[in-house]
Image (cartoon, rainbow, N blue to C red):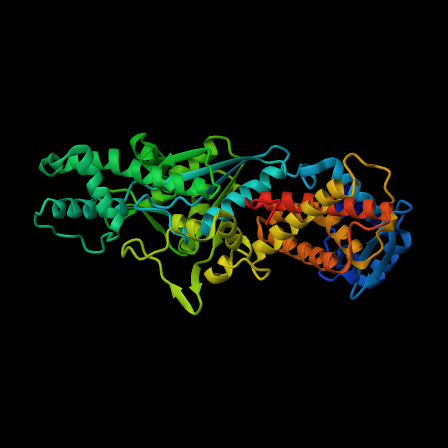
Length: 556
């Protein structure tokens, strides 16, 4: 309902501008309605007067006042319109519309807030894509939570979403793991071992060596390097991937496709894409290497595609991978990358353009690092040293729900300090507990009303919602009304934290309401109205949590 209300107000503003200033329709700016930060500023606000100011050569406030004078809105839709500040136009939606929306929520159920923004557009979300050199770390899990939540929100908003994991099974890190495993294999046999500099030292590397021993036996040590490499690729990499897949599944993340980098080399796609770039005039040779002229597209330096020794760089296969994505028909590509990939953004988008694709088809979301804090102590993570918190350990310690929520409750571009003690606490200070408890509380109120008082609101339509006059009742109703707009905003900006913040806020109002007012009273009609409100709240809490991949328990 909120989207229809916004449409009607936007159309009325457009017509007021056209009639008041004689603008041609083709130069009319798009009217955007946003939720003000302060409730006192109304339910929606627009800055259209400020946008028009330069074109009309008039002050924004004068323009806003003229627009308001000419507004023609449906009777009963808006109770007040005001011009504020330098020229904002604020709209206050009628209470009857806000309250009537509660019945819309009950009809829609878990589809309340679903929208058709995407119109079936084919979108690929690629995230995590950690090198298969060990279990997923808890740091990588921030990208997992962000990527999966973004995919959920986009799917809920009408996009055809495809989740993909890019397996970096080529390159120096894989070679280093192989050498580390070989060193441990020799040590198991009591043979001299030259552990590689910077090798992987975790206990799991011993497990990988033992796995080769179990499957192949000591004959492995007698094999030529090429045969050992093949055994490693055929046995160890699939085993590590099975660990990664299991950990991510336990985290609520399931992929549509696991795409191997190695296949790009075996199919010749890496070589082909370099030749296409060469034909397009963006490849040259210097100092014995092959270079991509990415500075032609605004990058700070040109990038090596093939090293002096003839081996392709990671960038070469990454460009081939992105071409592969586009050739598979994805209209929009979203990459969720860690902060250490910031320097690859410009050159990757440059490559898309150099291949004659639309660079805007690729969106790259960079998320910042995570510091795990327990009291005043932080834990550093490093796969090579073996001293890191794995995702599986984090899930075992906290559970999936808490871990996922903590990773997405802050904006992705901010450093995240993950408070392990707070995450473990079963208290109202823990935001996950706070929200889930609000949901369980709502469910139990409905259950009590039905089983203990005989008040069943299933299918009820003859309810007098005007009886909802308490401040918290109107605030909860308004926030429920805003939920579809919150979802749409999260889909538009790729910001799951918007939903997390909303859930915390509406839960806070509900807890306050519960502590001050009885939902089920001796007045049957008032009880029915409050139960409809409670049930609508339960719906948005359940839907919002599901978009974040967090469960909505009925008992706590």
